[in-house]
Length: 253
Image (cartoon, rainbow, N blue to C red; front, side):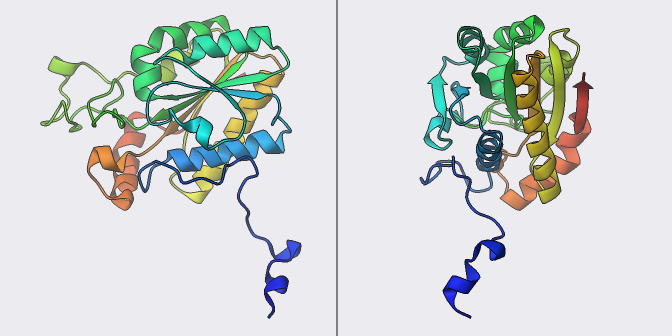
C-alpha cells in the first residue's frame, strides 16, 4: 500500500485540533491538562468561535495555556480570572469569555471572585481543573485535598481537626441562582473524554445564549504531586476522588 493511500481523507481517524499550537507542552507526563486543552481547542473550532472566544488564565499549572490554544488570552492575577472574564463579557458582548482555573485558584485565593461572578450570573464559562493539590508550587495541601491525603504540608494526611474539611466549591456553585449549568466530569477514559467535551460544548452554548454562568469541573490527576505513576494516579483518582467528588451534572437549567 502506498503512503498516499493511507493518508486519504476517508482513512483519517484523528488529526490534531487546528487551534492546538504545534509546541511542546510543559506539563508532566500523565497530566490531565493536555487532554483538557485539546478538548477546548476542538470545541471552540467546531462551534466557529475562533475569533470570539477569549480565555482568562491565572496563576498555576495552566498559567501558560496561551501557549497551546490559539485564541485570544488574558493573563489574570491569582484568583482573579472570573473578575477579568466578567469585564470581557460585559464590554465585548459578542465574545465568549471563559476562565481556566485550578483548585488552588477557584477554591482558595479566588473563592470570592468565583462565587460572586457565578452568583451574579455572568455569561461566562468556568473550566475548573481539580486535582486536590497545589501542583505547580510543590505539592502542598489545597482546599480540595481529601481527608487523609498526604501532601507536602500534610505528610501524615489531612486532618479535619487541624486542616478542616475539603471545600466542595462546585456544589456551592450549583446552589447559586446565577448558575445555569454545573457539572463534574473527568478525562481518565475515552468515554469520559467524550462526555467532558460534550459538557464543555454545552457550557459555551449557554454563554452564547446568555443563560448565565456555567461551571465545568474536571476531576484530574497530579501524578507528580501525588508521587505516583500516571497509571497508579488514575486508579487512585477512581478509588478515592470520585467518592468525594462524584461525576455527573449538579445543575442543568
